[in-house]
Each structure stands twice: as C-alpha cells, then as structure tokens.
Image 1 (cartoon, rainbow, N blue to C red):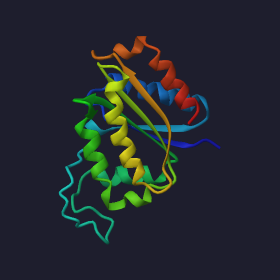
Image 2: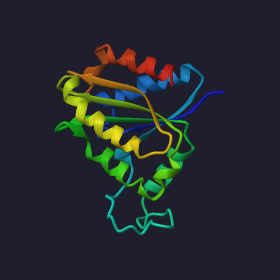
Image 3: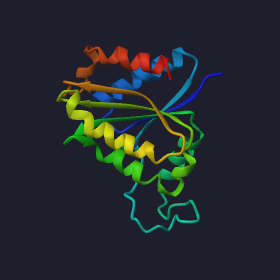
Image 4: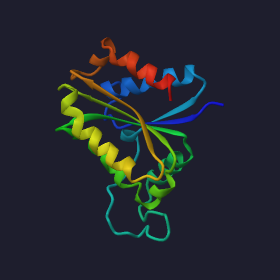
Length: 177
C-alpha cells in the first residue's frame, strides 16, 4: 500500500528551483505507487505566531486562517517534504512562519518520515544552517525521522535547476519515500 506524501513548497514563486525539485520528487513518488499532494505556502493565508498561547489546552490557534487545514494534512500524512529556497543562509520566511504555527498541534505530527529540499545560489555548505534549522523542527516532533536531504547548490535564476543532477536526485528521493 502506498504512502500519503505531503510536499510543502516554501518557494514564493511557482516554478522556482526548490519548487521544481518538489515536482520531480512527486513524479518519483507517484511512479512508486504513493499519493502526493503539493501545498504552496505562498498561496495560503498563514499569519505569524503571536506567542499568545491561546492554543494551550485547546489545540486550536486563535487565528482563523489556512494553517488549521494544513495542520490537519500534516497529521494524516505518512511522509512530509519540506522544501525551501535559501535566503541569507536560512529557510525562507514562509517556511519558518508555517513551522512556528504548528504549535497548537505539533505533538500530533508524530511518527512521520521527513525529507528536506533546499536550493541556493551558493554551494551545499551554505545550506547547512538551513538544514540544521529544519532538523530543529523535526527534533521537536515525536517519532520524526529525517530520511533524506537534498541540497541543490549553484542555482540562482528561476528554472536553473532543471538542467542539473538535482532533478534526478529529487526523483529518486521520491521513489524511495
């Protein structure tokens, strides 16, 4: 039986380099019999966490936006892929905001396999902080296992990643989800 894979694209632009790697991963996953859904954070209305702790004890954020539905998807998925371009040696703001907003129910995102995708103009070493920050998130989730990391370095212009080895690596990652 195939797995249910949720791909969360933090790219602020459709067809950006990290987003294209998401598509390649999805192709590999579907070819292996899994189901996959991609969510574009840019298309969702997700406000920043207010640290009001109104969610404490209720599991419900006081903000009424798209995050509650995304949390539902995260909780029922078997595999979660977090993909982000790297800006100033870290994940983009959309991804960080989404991670912070898991607070009301983050302990319910349990026993998931995670894959990370990051792209940057600089080389792979420049993405270490980004991957470390993503691991920091999964370290807080019960039973989370990081199963794969893909750092696509040396890509800057939109679409540049299409002509690199990273497309095949993303596809193979999807095949092994």
